[in-house]
Length: 422
Ligand code: HEM
Image 1: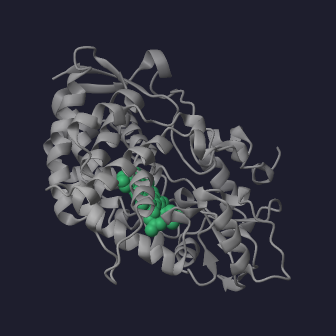
Image 2: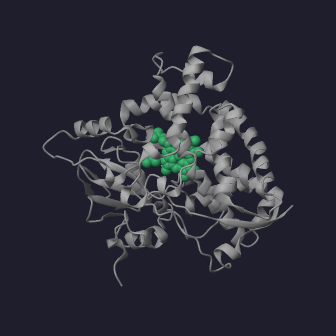
Image 3: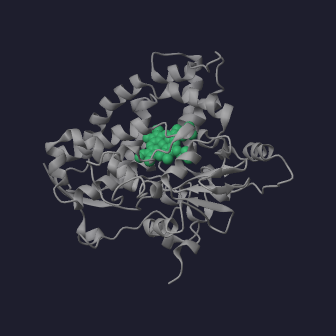
């Protein structure tokens, strides 16, 4: 049998279709393993990955989205930080918060903190309940739905639209701006063109909103966003606000959509689970987190080594791409007992790293958790006998799903559920 770890994880769809076999093959070689190609080092260990996530001195986030397809040929005779900044300057999509380092990242984070406030999240949760029911109404009479397109996408998209104060009359247009599966960062082969991504259009829409609110302030969330200042009192450029708002739509789209899909697969095939959650709704939060631990959408993320450092006995060298396998860390047996088992009662379940760790930890985590909770509450209330469609995906025990052809994101390309209206 050929060694699975020698497969090219960046191009080989067989690996994308069986990520957990791949992770366990890597883990058998150790928590930190150089792949031997593209200058990539893979990390599957929990403690090792957390140490890297928290270390922004030796590691840069410049390659978080691209991984080794970063357009930078490292020249060891030149200062690495200079080379990182040159690469960033030449590539607009390397200017998002997720790829920024140090001072620039801190500035973006301060704008973001003004967008996702506790008060906004509270109002947004009330909207989510109304929205979930409105979307379920669209297919409740059919007894079947595609989780990704019929429920997940509109729910995730319009939740972020409401959080950012997009007027309701524009919601319908925003609902359509969804990237197809081959237009996601982490697409196998590294082909990802932001300029043709439908989310780019969102940027233009937001530019209009923010410019208008700066000129004509109103009593609304967009005005608060437009008038927000940095800690030193200066006003951000409109493009900086627009970039962040657009990024939130992208970051909050496929991630949560795939979370809904994973949760519904569990509810369908895990005996007694739906009844237990109906009887104990206070366990729905743990249910959401256990799904995130085992099947969180962020399969892998990256860091670029900028200074030599030793972690857990491994010497990292400048110019290496560190592939942090978040989902493998979440199944590290040194951290989680019986790690592959689904157990909503496990004591340390919430210490998973589905949302990353450290400076770049997911800013939308509270939002994603709330979306997961509200979606499950309303789906369980409106539907009985929620089950994966045998017709589309085969019978229980032999289900068939096609996974995203992606080295960063974990999820399925399609998922149909059947149900009886409650
Ligand atoms: C299940 C849903 C989600 C998952 C699994 C997820 C996962 C992650 C992970 C792993 C990171 C860190 C990546 C790294 O350090 O390399 C991250 C960052 C981020 N996420 Fe999420 N995310 C989810 C939903 C959301 C939502 C709903 C939003 C907002 C609408 C959001 C906004 C962000 C932002 C802004 C960052 C960048 C933070 C920074 O660089 O400082 N995410 N996410």
